[in-house]
Length: 225
Length: 225
DNA sequence: ACATATTTTTAGATAAGACTAAAAAATATA
DNA sequence: TATATTTTTTAGTCTTATCTAAAAATATGT
Ligand SMILES: [Mn+2]
Ligand SMILES: [Mn+2]
Ligand SMILES: [Mn+2]
Ligand SMILES: [Mn+2]
Image (cartoon, rainbow over all chains, first blue to last red):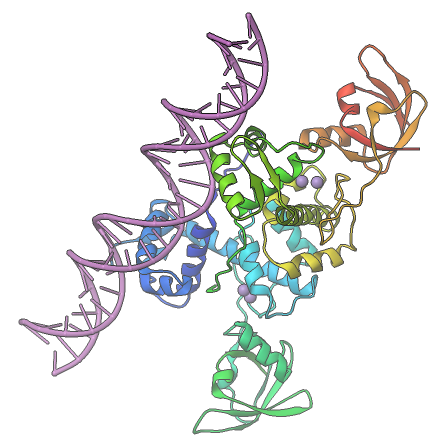
């Protein structure tokens, strides 16, 4: 009888790994203590303590004052947490009738449940979704992401159009704002006018026309057509 | 990522409340420190500490050396944890293809997820089940249990029969043993012979006949016919 | 280059929840 | 009733994860 060694980490350790995972995307330097502290709404001194522990466990590379980087091992753990988070979000929306602005806080709890079988079966039950309700990709078991081509709505020019495929900000305020305007994933958006002085857009979606600020356009991902 | 959910009670507090809830069923005295310690696989001194805290929060009545009793408030919290535990067990078996001997440990984790909407929607999704996979009743939102008439198989006499409706021991060893013998909830069992000297039974289930020990018969609930 | 500002680390404290060992109270037994 | 045993509580320690305040290192600006 062979039993596989499954490393156990505390929820706190997992949250730090996930924060570092998100923060190191697209940057080549180490992730700073302050950046982690800000993301986790904690103090820099707490981060220093935890970062020493994670380094001890070979989950991250840490040298004093140099910031941190995930090791391959750390990446594996972090992406498995992200995978769980996003699969649970799909479950909540698809099966339990949650709206996309209600799922995040619950998923923050569910992502720490330890059971390989649970997450495998959930994946099967949901039909192997590749994206969560916010259009973010769900890592596979090996941590690989299916990268989808997407651009910010703000990069569209006048008379160009695209399909709404994701959000940059997934705060419930922003998501509820989008709901109010009838902007949901999958919908087509066409830019009818673009104001130079403030970057605001006049767009059409469904049969409706509306204007949206530059801030909105900077937080909405579309797939160009 | 930045939202900090402040739970009303910690997982540890909830586990103590649940343990007391189960231990005080059918007894009129306070639940002893040692009984709680044994149930939670911890030390009596730890129990004393926690019991003081729960008493402070008016979840239990505690007087030194007298054992503890849940207050109505404590009962409400405890039964809501049991409700969550059992609903999650149903979910795992009905939707995720877990077998009844695999669900308990995962449900021990899931029962501490804080989200009233989650548990309401889960209840709807599962079709308002009244029992968990082990035949145990699921408390409603107010903590009320639908009491079902049931007896131990060992109380059946020769030539009497009944429907298998629950287990007294839900350890995975016992449940796997039942699986191996083809004994699952809903099946009819008839007592063909009853040995006086050791209490063992010779029974029929489906088309098969088999003998089971008194220990088994003492851990299986049936509804008499 | 050097003073200033910012970032990061250290030192020490706190709180929750567990433990061990020993004291105190309750219970059982002779 | 006196003694022995068991149960429960207390006292003190440990670990994890936080915090504040202060020191040290790094980055910035003139
Ligand atoms: Mn989320
Ligand atoms: Mn998401
Ligand atoms: Mn259970
Ligand atoms: Mn059960």
